[in-house]
Image 1 (cartoon, helix red, strand yellow):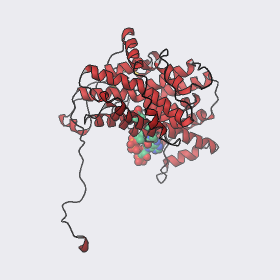
Image 2 (spheres, rainbow, N blue to C red; image 1 turned 90 degrees about the vertical axis):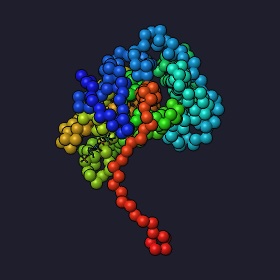
Image 3 (tube, rainbow, N blue to C red; image 1 turned 135 degrees about the vertical axis):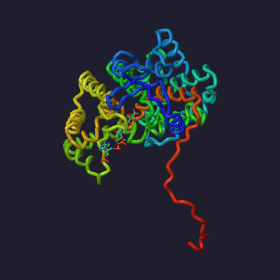
Image 4 (cartoon, protein in one colour; image 1 turned 60 degrees about the vertical axis):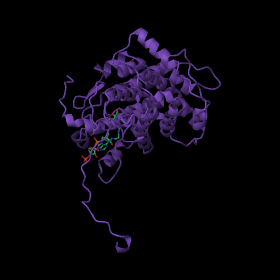
Length: 392
Ligand code: SDX
């Protein structure tokens, strides 16, 4: 029932924290944002409502939602000089490295964002990053593709606008595809927060020194990039492609995943907390079927993924270790169907996780949490006297 756990007061200095934002039960596969189930939110809410819910604690009414969107739109132009930083990157640069750098650089262009002492200043910093982040996400993708950098369109919804900035062709009118809008909206909701995961803990601990919001987010983007974390969605697609190239021989890869001498892991499987199905993976798997069929796409990769899942769920190695598909296992199949390049998959994860990072950072600052300072168990040498180099 999401009951209260009594925490040892000493926990405060361990990097753990109290939070009112996201509840998850790894044994039961339950995930709730501010008490609302992920299943209901993915079905009935839109992404901007969930952004508001995570950050301010309540679902917005129409007036609040419209004002929130207007305030975000008023910050959705990015200083053109930021393009000079973007241009300095080689086309070969990984989009996550570009995104982390541009996000950090935003502080140089919008220094007032560091001051969050008042509620007004905090709100301004939040709507600033919510306005500018989708623009630099789109620019990151189009830079890699050698396409002109697009600004947003204030007449569009938040997610429609993201898709237009990403996909508008230089020589034709952009036509919204509701299938893509709904798919992206749902994926962003499902990625929006996940309590104290690696990247969110990084955002919180960076912000606990009172570093600004944007640079704290940049540190979270870097943490998310790792293939054991958000980078897994790219690694899953690369793994499924490799299996397909290998004639679809899933058994060979299952054997590799179980071989202790082989560093290969079944990407998109397993979780630090979920020892049951990741509820997000269930929803994304159904959405993958729907999106591909709505778009009329036959993707053999989806069949390989389903075959791998079936084998793993019947294999004692995976069953004994409670290894189930996680959020990253099917998401890339939808991104690929949407025409998003595989190197952009983790950027899309960051776009979804942005509101969660903001909400958690804001909570940490408003609770005036002490500077993060995890302790250690020292297992190194005891005292040793110095020996001059001649005698060593
Ligand atoms: C995300 O924390 C979050 O909430 C993260 C996230 C979020 O929303 O923020 O949910 C997003 O990061 C999802 C996870 C994406 N990563 C992957 O899909 C990468 C593949 N998975 C693993 O590397 C692993 O499962 C982790 C990193 C996700 C979890 O690692 P754990 O819990 O530390 O597991 P472990 O390394 O202790 O492994 C336990 C056992 C080991 O075998 P034994 O030593 O007991 O014999 O399970 C095995 C591992 O070898 N194992 C796997 C495996 N994952 C664990 N074996 C094969 N394939 C795998 N994927």
